[in-house]
Amino acid sequence: MNKDIKILDAHHHFWDLDKNYYPFLSDKIDNDFFLGDYSSIRHNYLPSDYGKDTKDHNVVGTIHCEAEWDREDQIGETLWLDKLSKTSKFPTAIVGHAWFDKKNSEAIIAEQASFDIVKGIRSKPTIRFSANSKEYVKSGSMQDLSWRKGLKLLEKYNLNYDLRVPAWHLEEATEIVRLIPNTKVIINHAGFPWDRSKEGLDFWRKGVKAISTEPNTFIKLSEFGVKEQSWNYKQNADIIYELIDLFGPQRCMFASNFPVSRLKITFDDLFTNFKNIVKNFSLDEQISLFSDTAIKTYNIKITDIEKR
Image (cartoon, rainbow, N blue to C red):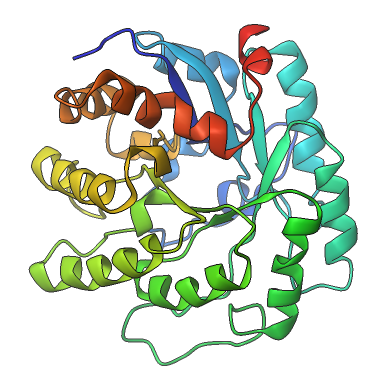
């Protein structure tokens, strides 16, 4: 196991509940949260906290993904993080938020792109509540023509798209990826293999196989937690191997999803597990998985890492 390998954490969050408003952290608990009770993370999580969690690993850079900040103030989170990055070691890069189907979508996307630190946008489409749910609100979904029009603006502003949908929308998302062949699409959290039954994994597998065939897709090997279950090393290792086989190390990136993943595992255990899982991979492959894929995919300059 390469203990000292450089890590570019491709997905994490900071929040300051004393100064900023995050509805899911500040308002009523969402009983449908995908990892169950998350009350233990409803407190400030700042670079100093992240530093304590990561102290036993060589984290050289991070990508902050939008953290459900007040949607009435989509640029507010970016302004706060940009200032934070100037006084702290992290974040190195930001994935901001912008709705795709609103009248001001292009104005928000353009403003996000005006920040050098912003490398992409995450905008969650409207989804079905479960694989078997027939209820599907078209407005704001991947089938909404207004949503698609906004999505296509990312190429104009040279921004990536972070795609976060459950497994039952992955095949549909493949159609969307084909609409934006010049935009890098990064699938969040391994495509959410939540159902660990044989049937559930077969269903997830069908979706990730379909989307992996699109050359502009990449995937974050992150958030392997399952509701009401412990972090399962064997199951998660098998899923990681399968994704690396599908996408290749040059399109896969390890990420922590901290502090959310702390509901299931410590950062030390998480990245120790990642390192053990790929310990027999070549050094070049390990470097891709732990840092280089994220650096290249998000167009991060080495100088941005070295100066911190």
